[in-house]
Image 1 (cartoon, rainbow, N blue to C red):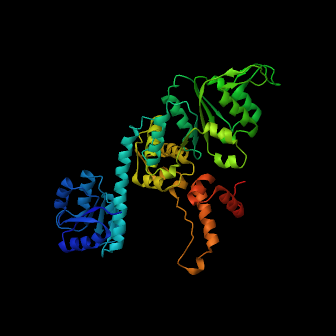
Image 2: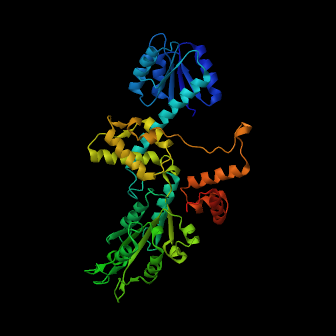
Image 3: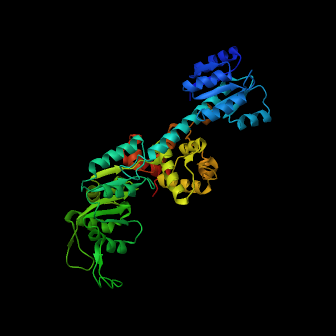
Length: 454
């Protein structure tokens, strides 16, 4: 990461040598030969990092560092010293230095230190920017995000918010599918009506049928009183069928008929009851694959999938991670009555590096924990869960410089296919699309690898 560096050294030759070494590495370098001149430059120039010698005539590097921390706390300072002792390092850090490097200066090591400092400043600025953005994300309430994928989701919702067409929201667990359903209801023309939700994966088939369609008294052993089904309860409102991919196969034709005819017949009843609902269904399953495998009816799939909203995984949303983290931080700090208002740059860096298999839900839990543990007015790395602090990205090795580590083409293909399937959260339809092969071909290969998930 390059940037604009202000070099401060009372030896002009040293300034020129550093500028000559950093220029080819992409840095824009300016220099001053005194601390006083450097402070004047900082008042009028935009600088990403200050690189200062420790021992200078007049104001030394430590004093300059303290002045910069006071007047420009957003600009990190890297100190150069000829004395690589522990005492010198401690003095520099206490003065507010971001890092220090010893003479003779090795240009590669200096470039790495400056890159870290520039990235540190960049993250601080990003955190500040995202804190302001949190308050602006009001159009769709909890759908916080400024990334391209989330902007496309909001644009789609904006166009269909007043439509009665069935909506299918897909995405990995924890991506906010139910949030989309609630936002569509609150912002739509049915907002004065009821919002009724049922989890299709949480109930056995007989109970789920009774919940959806209702029953009359005496319809079965425990039916001591009549019950109105959820379709009728949601009349003139929104009905959310959460995890519709887990709907028992025997119930699917009954649901299809209800959606087509807009009437339900309670279990044990003779009369059909009309209803008027906006249907929103969610699933973390690959329904197209389920249709091919005979686990989900194709006609029901087309009935519920009139408008498709695909929620992106958190790992595909870039700096939305920090925007959401700030959003949850403010929320949980308010509930806990704690004055925790920001992320440290180091904590932000760890959050950006993590893969978030649990998506937004996992991030919210991490921020709730961080607020509970926070000892300062900001969240530090130590406040984050261990798996986030110690996370290291994994890579699939498909080639190497050492001939003994090279693998046959068939093995390279196996590793790549499994990596793609893992990256898309097991969605075989999406994986096949990324790989450029048919779904049946992908299924056959996964069975061959013993990774079909069946």
